[in-house]
Amino acid sequence: MKLCPNCGTQNADQFMQCTACGSVLPASAPQPVYSGTAGYVPPAYQQSPVTSAVGWLGWTLLCGFLPIIGPIIMMFAPDDPSAKNFGKAMLVLQIIFGIIGAIFSSTVIALLRYSLGI
Ligand SMILES: [Zn+2]
Image (cartoon, rainbow, N blue to C red; front, side):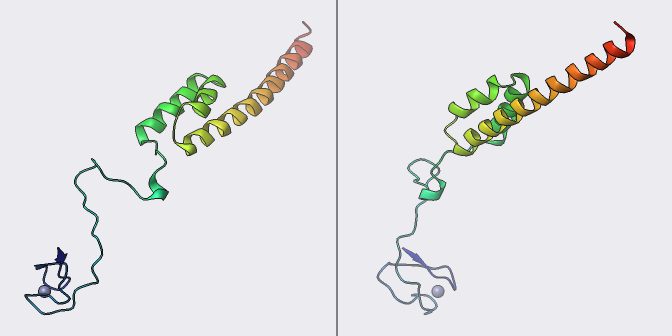
């Protein structure tokens, strides 16, 4: 069936003009049938799984509570490629900040010990 863009009347696919108002109908293209999500095949650009907002919250909490380990899990566990990339980025950042933090805290401890004469 083709819907008339002018008046909304349903016309048989072979009709070139609307049976109700006579306006020209668009060329017959198979209209996608959206019957819920079952049987719906998304276009190729949408086919990679997408992590939900709740999923992102979970991953962020995991990376926060389990530094290094969380991002490593995140690099392999999700199907979503952007979540995997996020895991890689988090791992690199946590290693960098871990090294900076270790240098900083050992410097502070060394300075404290020196100034206190321990
Ligand atoms: Zn019409």
